Image (cartoon, rainbow, N blue to C red; front, side, top):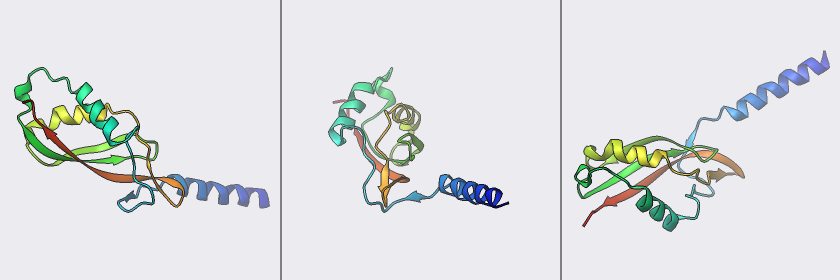
Length: 122
């Protein structure tokens, strides 16, 4: 009987710890693109392969994304800027390498990230 209670207790708390779906804005260590901001800019420039530059007029936009506990990105959306660019930019950002996730109290947590972008083909 004691073993069964221990297993039930352990299973409950393991499942609870894995189910944290909170998206944190205030963390001890911010999420980061591998290699930092300069590496992210280089990656964006290298991977921005659009068929027609006219699809992306000069634009300032802000993308909001969630960096998951494993470094993958989710919920990518344009929160300010030209809506014409949404699909192409979201597709590009979704192919990003895994990020270093944010940390709070020594553990990886989900976090919100606001990514400012300025697209200019001149």
